[in-house]
Image 1 (cartoon, rainbow, N blue to C red):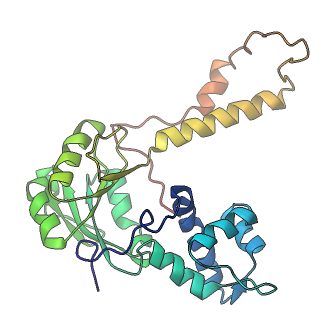
Image 2: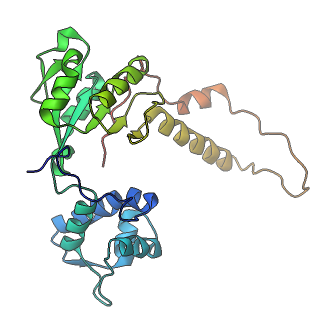
Image 3: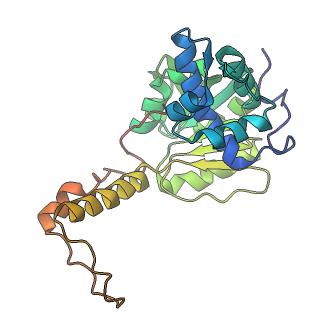
Length: 267
C-alpha cells in the first residue's frame, strides 16, 4: 500500500475545491459510512444533509465539486460516494502518523481505534520521559524524543500529532517540520508558528468547553426570563453576573498540567 510520503494525490487546492467544502467532507463520509454499515444502497440529498447537519442545497453544491450529482428520483449511490469522498480526502492510501507526548491525552489518542479504519496508522509513539521508553501503549512501544527524526524518516511519516504540554509544543513542532512533517494536529494549548507549506489543525478542548459554558450561561439567563430591553433604543447596563456558585458549576474543569486535558475522541 502506498504511504503518505511517497504518493500524494491531487490536492483539493489544485482541484479547486473550497476549504469550507473540504471541512464538510468528513461529515458526509461519517454519515455515509453509517448508511453503508446498514446496507442502505441510496440516499437522497435531504436525508444525507440532515444526517450530516448541513442544508441540502449546500450538500449538492459541495458534491458538484466532486463531479457527483446524483440521480433524480433515486438520490446518491452510497458506496460510490464513500469511495469518492475517501479518495478525495486521501483515505484510500496509508497515512503513517506519529504521536508526540504520551501523557493522559496522548495515551488516549493512541488507544483510539478509529484511526486505522479511516486510513491512518499510528506508526510511533514518542515522549521525552526516559521512564516511558520501551513501555507499550496500545500495543506500541513508546520511543524517546532523541529518536524522533530517525523514526519519521524510517516510517515515511508526513502527519504529526502534538499532545505535549504547551511549553514543549513549539520545540517539538520545529523538530517535526525540520524532519519533513508537513501536516500537524496540535492538541497542546498554544498557537504554533510554522513555515509556509505546513498545515496545522488545532484542537483545544478547553476553548470548546468555554464556548459551551457561554451558551449555558445564555440559556440560564433566558430561563430566568430577563431578556435585554431593546425597546428604548438606548444602551442598557450589562446584566449582573450570575451568582458565584452558579458560575462554578458551569466552569470547565481545570487541567492538572498543561496538555493534560480530558480526552475527546474524533467521531
